[in-house]
Length: 161
Image 1 (cartoon, helix red, strand yellow):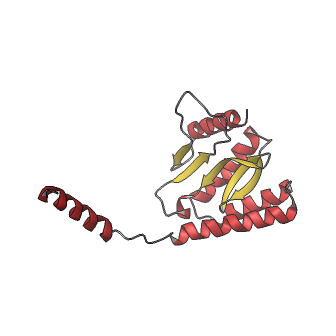
Image 2 (cartoon, helix red, strand yellow; image 1 turned 180 degrees about the horizontal axis):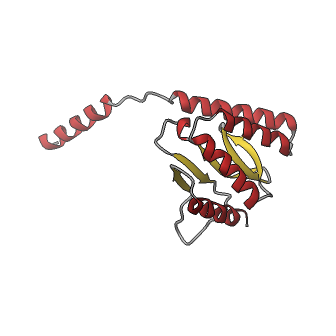
Image 3 (spheres, rainbow, N blue to C red; image 1 turned 120 degrees about the vertical axis):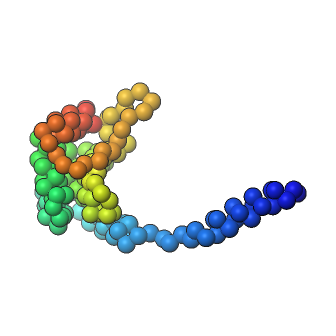
């Protein structure tokens, strides 16, 4: 083997050995625990969880949020309910989400959840948003204006069509 290859290998192995996997963050572990609890609660109530229970769980999660996430989550809740009444509110990994036939279609991830600089409004693979070979499924939110609200309403309607 040439000395050049030995140098490349040793540099590469040194670089990778200095990076140690630290495991999941506290926020990620909390989200997983939330999901397990949601799963257990859903299983104990049966496959058709009561819509009112989901609504109260989502509203409770929204109430726990800090501003400006709380204001955006409240407004999104109203927009989604008006745009797609067939969607049922529920929590998903501790976040407000909206499901059709038990499958999450869209969700709101507050910025504080994973200590990011913006909140995220996203869609799962069950959303009917397919457009060619590539389409967006998550959107960064810093604030909600009438323009963003109109876009979100249109996307939610398309997602459940």
